[in-house]
Length: 172
Image 1 (tube, helix red, strand yellow):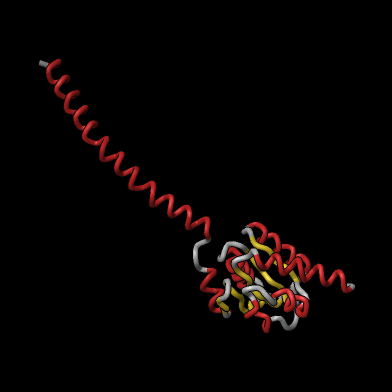
Image 2 (tube, rainbow, N blue to C red):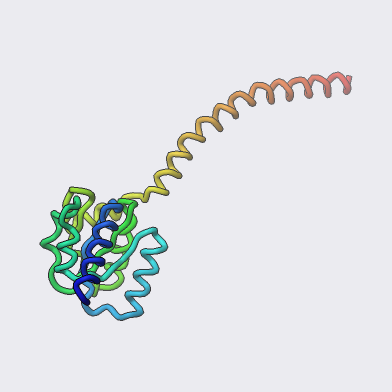
């Protein structure tokens, strides 16, 4: 890689890191191409990305971002998982690491907060942003449904009473 390409790569990664909410640092030694492709597909499906990085260039890209605190994790065969959603990348990385022991999670950062392996695993257990939105909408719409049911109940009861009265009068 020539100097101009390296500079462009560092600038691109620096810009990408400015737009994400979570960075997870991993070691990928021993993963096959098929396994890496599978992992990247799962990341894409969750709205995250997985990228093999050059350590020295990544440390340069981290400077000036809120992720400077994880620069010391970049040693050995390193890759990063990142996403705007603060849970997506962690979920996929932890699930994949459970199934494949060749992927090792080293740590990461949620904004300026540095996370260790346990922090990433704890983050992975949280519901995603879309799940939280769904729950919130469900909680908001449930009371409205109940109110509509309560308001309709007296009218329904009144209609049933009138119908019973009419049927009684017809029978008499």
